[in-house]
Length: 241
Ligand SMILES: C[S@@+](CC[C@H](N)C(=O)[O-])C[C@H]1O[C@@H](n2cnc3c(N)ncnc32)[C@H](O)[C@@H]1O
Image (cartoon, rainbow, N blue to C red; front, side, top):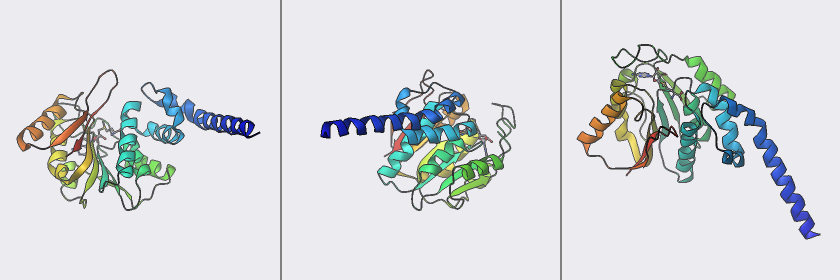
């Protein structure tokens, strides 16, 4: 009898897991990259990434990377806020917002006027609206006072942002000047054990140059964890030591 019950529980559990995971499976169509099936065993991740995907230019590997690191930070109780510079419609940042616990804040920085003037890309590329971010924060039921949208150019907003400590600094601003401004204003606020994600290190020459210059001159201590792989589209990220 006990053996029979065990089987009923087993079948019930796995059927439920399959249904819960399968429902948002159609959402996978909106991911820009292939999604590994193992995600079906994590219904929370499946649902959240499905919800944010329309609000992000990132494919599955990048969204998954943010999810995993934010979970890790929460599990290890590393202090500090979650920050993304270059939030666009807020999709990637909101993953962190949805996973943040307690007093931790999540910051959404963007000009909402697209890229600034530069030789590297067309001015105004990647324009999103603050309302897109607000809509997503509302859809995910996130607290407004813990999910803070900061509109403006990094050179004006980052130096005076009231942030003491950063647990995850996600940089996704494409070009040299913007990347340099983020590092100069915020890197020293990343706590030991915190993560820095550089989305464009592999894809934008200007971003790579700004990062190499910054780390080359400052002799900072960090542990590189992920490297860019064009096949997987993985971003560079590292842990501050
Ligand atoms: C590629 S998009 C970011 C994509 C986004 N992280 C996502 O998940 O889809 C780059 C963003 O950086 C912003 N940006 C770039 N340089 C900036 C600067 N100096 N100040 C403010 N925003 C900037 C642009 O407005 C744009 O929304």
